[in-house]
Length: 125
Image (tube, rainbow, N blue to C red):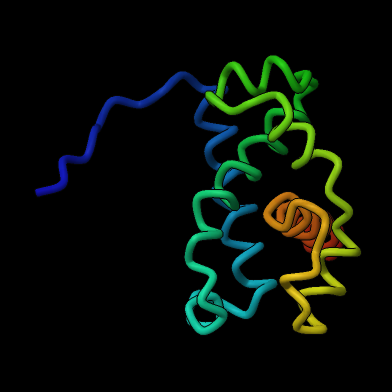
């Protein structure tokens, strides 16, 4: 049985989690939705997408790679790879079906694409 914790984190944490969750789902939409992710046989991307969403959310608030790594329990190198990912390279490879040839951090690139997309969505509103 799964137990859901009802304690609310502090306000800043709530904002970061909300943003990370929105970026996570937007990245999945970019891939074509949950079903398409399943069809790609890339369900293992889910934890990496969530990590990347939190990394980007914290970086947008001015946190440095070492701080982010410490807070999330990741290596500093992983955080740097996520932040350095070239989203356009990842986008191109995904839509060309050349996923195995991507040298950039795929989850990082997808989350950056999601952030760009979110920005465009907000501009339209």
